[in-house]
Image: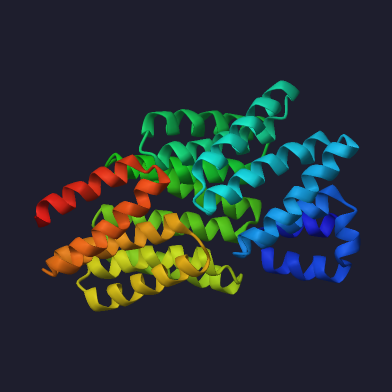
Length: 322
């Protein structure tokens, strides 16, 4: 059990699945904690259906045995899997239920996790003010219980908010904190994600060369950890750095790969972001017809996710192209 928890905390989900495989399904099925960890690991490796199966079992076992800590975390994980699969309303329901229960029971770690994830939904839907509020609550909750990993996640997310607002300096400060905190927590997976987030901030600040180096570093770490989805997210950011440096053909090829992988792993938000970036690349290189088609596809995806801000941005792109 201790080894399984340590692997999960360090973001080593491929290694966690290997460890659980040695234990066998029987041992996992008898433990709410191991069932939950199995669900998290499968979901993070792109196997959502298997992840839901194990998390649902963890939820049932935890309820039957009165294990409120695992029950609350399982609610949050069910929401996270729904979010990654593009089922945003379902995700919001799980996070909201989990948050209400956690507040009643004084579970500050779950308050942090659910608030952080609700912040992600507000961010996706373009409500930056509510996103900051949720991230701030999460940050304080994680600090109260000494969860450095959670603090790193919220700093990473706050960096994205500052980037959206054009505040590159504060965005970089938050991203730098996230990288160091994830490193302190020993979670290379999140550290790489924070490095990639910092690279995207650098693109907005015009430093495409450093952004390219950082996105490549993040991608290498995620590939070493067999996290194909996170590596694809890094690749989308790397494509932005390449496009910013004039290497548009490489960027186009890379974005097409990301779109294919997002489709394969059922990650609609990632696919929509890559299609948006590809549309902007086509617009930049004067390929108006392709830019329109791709922008329309990305817009439909974002609309289905309730990403109002991205829909409005793509409407502006389509207006320019018209």
